Image (cartoon, rainbow, N blue to C red; front, side, top):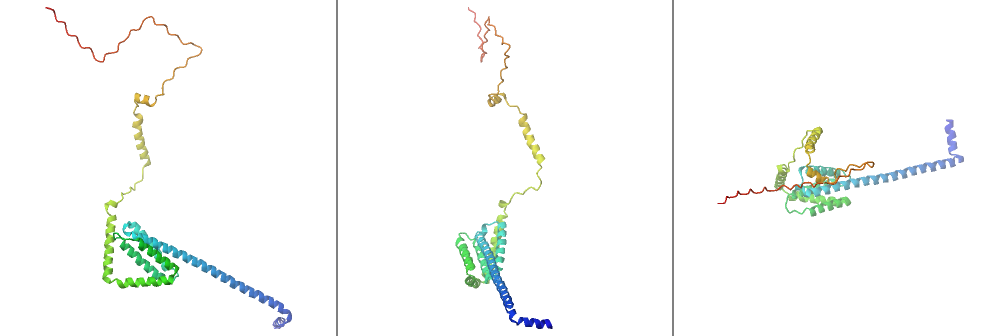
Length: 280
């Protein structure tokens, strides 16, 4: 117990006051720096999370707007394109519902209902889809900027659609959608849109080369006519034999007798002469 008595005497003595003051200042500085670092880190993390949420929200809104453009021409898409569009819409719907924003579920329900209406209206001849797509985009952008106000508007629209549609109307619309989908599948399953089957057998390269050689051989074996050869190669003539410089070429002797002229053969033989008639 002696060391405890000595420590208490030193702690309350005048010599310990500077040491205690310095230790208190260091402790307060460490605590303040820790709190400041935690506050700065918390603000940075909040900014990173907010930026990430904004990026996810913008990506989801862009996917929904792109899906609205495809939904406006839904009846003109192929079945494969419709499947890809439905997958993109499903992913965007999940992203919107998982956002940490109040009213994200209401916004996702409103977007799904509007997309379904655009798909149904795409089968109507003369329907102007551009104003509907523009309104859909503007409402989603407004929800991104002011979630609380847009949530109330979305909830109001959903309640209005639910109250104005009866059960018989829903059944009739479902039957119409099923009929349109059946006609669409029948249109793209017709022989006009059928693609030719692709052969699965591998290509025999050696056989192709043999066929090419067989086609080249008759062309190489056929002789070229002389007139055609002369017309194609007019400069290919036999060169004169060189004359030796040490031996003079013999001089031809002068002709002593004219060579008999050969008359050109007549094209038509002469007519036979009639026999002479004897005089009386």
